[in-house]
Length: 77
Image (cartoon, rainbow, N blue to C red):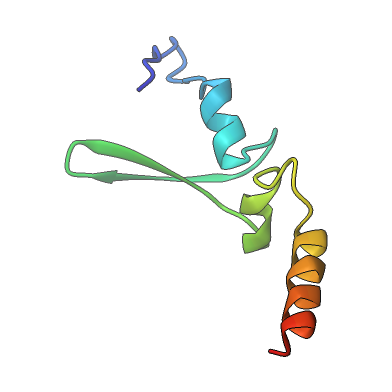
């Protein structure tokens, strides 16, 4: 859990670790709402796939699928 402080203009900075984890980028729109005593921020995305950006670093999905397909062919499935 991170702690942030409210600026004199009512602004907060979302910690880098959280921005990276959620794929938040500069100028991205966020929906803000209040639920009971919680402030909720929800990224607004044009494409749901953008939320996965960077989450598969170090792996190649295409290579993994091709390898799995080759195994299926070899085993006769």
